[in-house]
Length: 379
Image 1 (cartoon, helix red, strand yellow):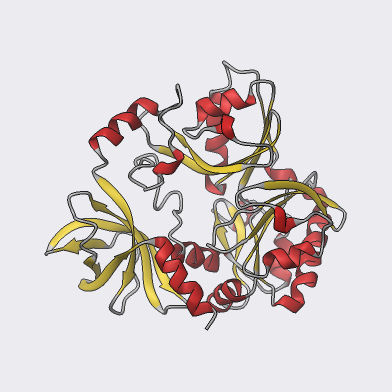
Image 2: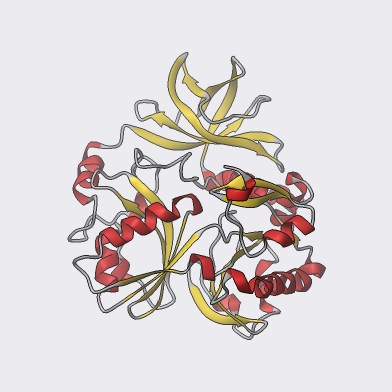
């Protein structure tokens, strides 16, 4: 796709004016980095980084049967969400495959806010509307009228608190609040894709022809975070941060051929619900156990694992890498991949074939690795 055919966010010109390396991503012309991947990555772990994530999809779901609709659409217990509460979930096919993973927040009775992956915007809105026929529900695509920023890192909440009278420290993880930031109406959700604390901020009612308002809020946040070390961060560091945290990327680590159980996000599936799309297939898979499982990997030898690299145990191929890079803090290769269930996960040492050479790696638990990384960041 040529640059002229790519979509742009409200901040596109700002990114170019501030020297960002721009690339094509999810159909958008987006910043890959501003200074350097390692600098932006480590600054987010030690202080704070702000990301333009306007390319992601956003929807409002309203109507008298919005809750029933979402309970049918998603495998998670939506009816149990309190106002302000949120959850990680996924759309599933009838076969149990993942159409997309997402975050959903209940703003008020029969009013929900959803965030989906940028590359899947068209597919996801089609999927949602396809299943509205039985319900009194309205799906509003607000993606183009809500610039979205992610403020992440140990200092993120402190920085954002300077711009609002709302008590952000009282907002629990995976909860949301409607508030004002320097006078701008926003939905702020305590969520992210880095393994750090922080908020994702949707600035409401700002179309592309009003992009100066998005630039103003972006620069306000940067100015208030200057003393805390805040920097703008591109997509490259966002990828290395999520890999260190063991977070899946749709299209690489999860897709319609992987189920929540295979991806080890089975906690989003509540089989006691009366019905939801994909329930029958997921009931069967849980009973029979998935034949492959997603794992985290860290290199014990030099080498950067990449998508498609075979994973070996005892000389036999047991799986493959689905995404990989290098951890800027550990200075070691890290990856996600799938291995056959027959392989005992407790046997953590494996080989990854990189450049026709088999190199030692270890299967890790994402939370354990992230704890190690955060300690390293504070040293």
